[in-house]
Length: 394
Ligand code: FES
Ligand SMILES: [Fe+2]
Image 1: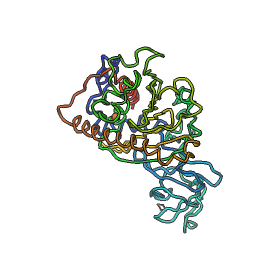
Image 2: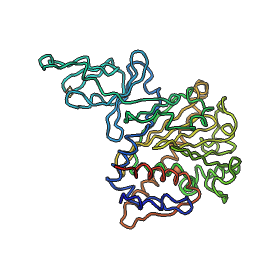
Image 3: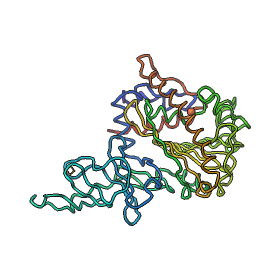
Image 4: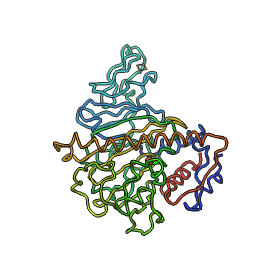
């Protein structure tokens, strides 16, 4: 199934193309190939540095089966390590918390916050054993504003090279000033690409978000973002109500509209982010830095969706909501922010239901590749990107 020609119809221009073959969403072999060629090589979004705000704060998690520790050390620097003990490989620590050092629960080896092995009980009798040789293996970690990314590949180019000009395009949202105000995890019974494609297209909005998002049609841009437009998606270039942008490793929807798309109808928004200018002030930008992150920048704040593949038919979603520091200090913040959580939770629940139904359907022996609607141009660009990655020589 992995010969190049199986993807020739995916590679065509969107309106001539087919979707990916169903096996790409169900097969363990294809999943393993994605892990190897995508997740083990790329910068993977892992969250906000506020999750490890103080020295000693750590978070342990598995990403595509690789146990990882992210920790802030005594001098405030953030590190990532392989969460694999150098003695006999046990996961050293789980969950989140604050520690002075990491002590492996199996035989008591102790690692400093900078990864050095400082304690190894009764190892003085082992010939030539030097603790300096057995620190935790470091994993590369770089930041975009306060957002953290890790890369398992020592030879990968820096994070900014992967993100490209998306960094400039989102600069006026000032990610250095974004506070993480809520983080929520949930599991969904579908392939990671099924969920990611879903959040990349408004084609489903009138059907899946009928009473929630599809009713927000105040102007042309909002109508298109609601998937209700007869316009060809993205038509009009720079002046289009919704402009499509395709980078090397990302795609974006740049929507011009009045009102907030971060709230359900009838809720009152926070004031706009002060640093916004141009199109960022007059709408929203939904960006999809590949492989599996959504960054939804709204006029007042933002949220991200991090998709972590757990297996061919299972994924973890991490939803993070962020606002500028000044907004978080408003006396009405705690009350009004509930509207943003509500919008994200209600629509996510709607997306989870439909993407699990899609997983069931593509797992059928009757499933075949389908065709692409113009409103799915961004999801199509993502599929082509995946095909390019997995088609690389073994
Ligand atoms: S496996 Fe960690 S101390 Fe033995
Ligand atoms: Fe949706």
